[in-house]
Image 1 (cartoon, rainbow, N blue to C red):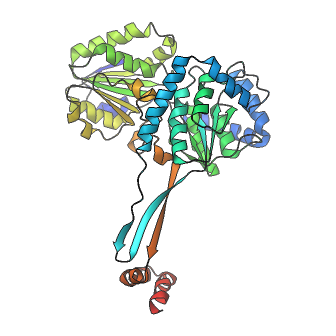
Image 2 (cartoon, rainbow, N blue to C red):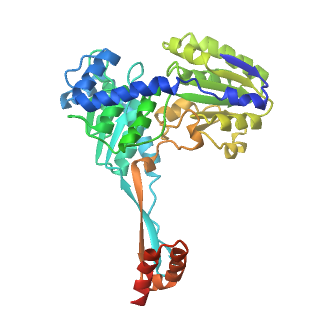
Image 3 (tube, rainbow, N blue to C red):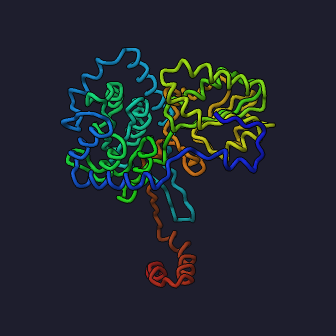
Length: 425
């Protein structure tokens, strides 16, 4: 880990940089994968399963019997936890549905907006070392609430050619239409281009490593929308003298264990909390089953001592973290100052894990400083908003002159005539 005591603001630009592969190292591979999937369809995905996941899959389609048998493979406690999380996520996202408001902008001119679901959506669920069944809930629940007609899911198989049963169970209870055994950039390519088995979708959702993020960006060349550039996990913790070092360390490690390319940043105004948190991280990481990955992430992470919480928040806004934890006593004084963050957790007991699993908010969030211009996934992510308007005869009479003058000023006389011909009638 990197330790900084009272760094000056002219060094901040270097401190907020993320560890990343050079784009040119990735782009060639992504292009080749898309070309192979376009050419050979399902067979390409089967070969990529062998190459990248060491998995033998005779078919990439998950059968209904595989989905049904998944329920018996997980504990009742886990099933209950999944159902409870689903309920909270549904409740929070359902509250985001707004009633139609018809606005009379001018007498006789009424405008409004209505939601229409994105009809075909693709969900990518990371597997590998951490099968993120919780992401199924975060994406399939709002997709169903929005009314998406087709929800397909892709996730990498394990070495036995199977998808984790918790992923299959979560997909079943959340109403996923079809599930496929393919991961990484090749799964994004399949959902973008379509194969014999996998339909081409209109929008792709889900987090992933830098290759998945690059593939999602590449997918947009084929007319496919994406939720956001959601890449390796990150958290920034701001702490004052009232913070609990053991809690702070646990939150930092909860993101560090995601993978070696994750990044965590700890900022505090208190030297005692600073030192004790570093000690707690060193102590806790030894007990983690995934400590090798966590230690690699910590090598790219920073522990920073600053003078004031205001300074820490200013740094955070520049960094624009995926997750921000304000482990400070008077957090209400600082929430309005947070400009750039995916999701914010307030106080000593608001652990980031709550948002990852079951509080109700969505954990699919912008990373790599994209919180400066992207929101996390919400109900709105799964809908398009179409505007409607109705002009009565009186409405056109009231507004027509302004339209004619503006159209003529732009030299668009056919536009003007579309109004004039009606007014003359």
